[in-house]
Length: 389
Ligand SMILES: C[S@@+](CC[C@H](N)C(=O)[O-])C[C@H]1O[C@@H](n2cnc3c(N)ncnc32)[C@H](O)[C@@H]1O
Image (cartoon, rainbow, N blue to C red):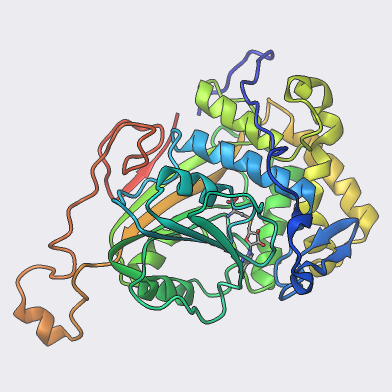
């Protein structure tokens, strides 16, 4: 990525979650008996398995991140070429904003979002509903039901990818799609401008260490492709993207993504037009949510140690001279129309790959159409792509 040497920029982002109902709308007391630690609120159902908060500040962040994701995907909600879906499932839906958008886009589909926390709004399109559920427990949806199963940013939430993708495979209709949007917390840099000792770089390394120790590792993004292949999916497509730490890149789209990445950890009471004025004051507010419970609970740091470290991380994150980025990916794949052949001898008897031969390859369509085609790159879909702007 090429760095932009100019300092002054305007943001075009105007998102707000004021229109979404708050987490207090649920009457289900057992799942809303939230836990409070380090000044943040955490989920009640299956308490303790997810280390990030579920309070209003975090919900704001998730919705701003939804905007960021759409920026990265050229306005699309998904890249897989699912057609006329009737049943869609979103795992770990958070505020449910993706489900709501999908329900509006596909009025003929029933969209279900599940989460440990009932933090979704009550007023949603009639074809959208939410359930409190743990996607790591046995699935009760039945086999061959969904046209699309989606998950986004379940980093640090999945203890067994193979078993999750087996469950998804069974729950998908033959020909149905799975789409996975994930990222890493590690910091990458291509031009040596981020020192190895950087606090921001170490923050990402600590986060990976913590979640590996907790049994819910952040896997390298390219591993999602092999995970889906191993689960038996066909037509696996992989797009890798870069998330700049701030607005340092020259490319306008990456610059805006970098801005939103910063905004994603700024409370929404800060007007975005005041960003330059207030970002330094408020950056830590959001970053804390990812850090306090994992660093104190797993690494054994003291609260003051965390605060001192976060001050360094926050300060470095705003340095435009440090050209860091995190990696993210969109990986989508299809359940074969014809089940894979059970044995080698049977497979030998067929000519070609019976499991995939009848499936048309995804087609690349224009941005904003919610179908196959990589973000940023105006090239036909291939099995592996990366973005470098
Ligand atoms: C980082 S948020 C992402 C939310 C949403 N997918 C999005 O992209 O806006 C992760 C969400 O996954 C949920 N989650 C984590 N582990 C879960 C589990 N085992 N079952 C269901 N939901 C889970 C969390 O409660 C949280 O809302």
